[in-house]
Length: 106
Image (cartoon, rainbow, N blue to C red; front, top):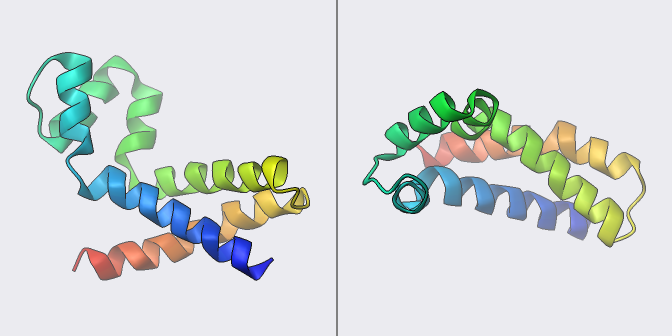
């Protein structure tokens, strides 16, 4: 169980790092809006077009909570973990990823 837990932490950390620290938003801006956008401009444009989604994808903490829940549900449905696993990941992964974020962003 502990191995699966840390695999989940690595998955969430990797996806958050990919979203917030890579040029992925710039690439998506080219594809979705046919414009060369900076990451902040991409967040703003998505927020104008879809406010709820814009809030979720531009906030590191918000994204970490929902991504943690999705990863937890994945382990419940695919790996056969108990139902409380999704709640465990929802309440613990975000704090671990936030600590990692603070270390990385210095």
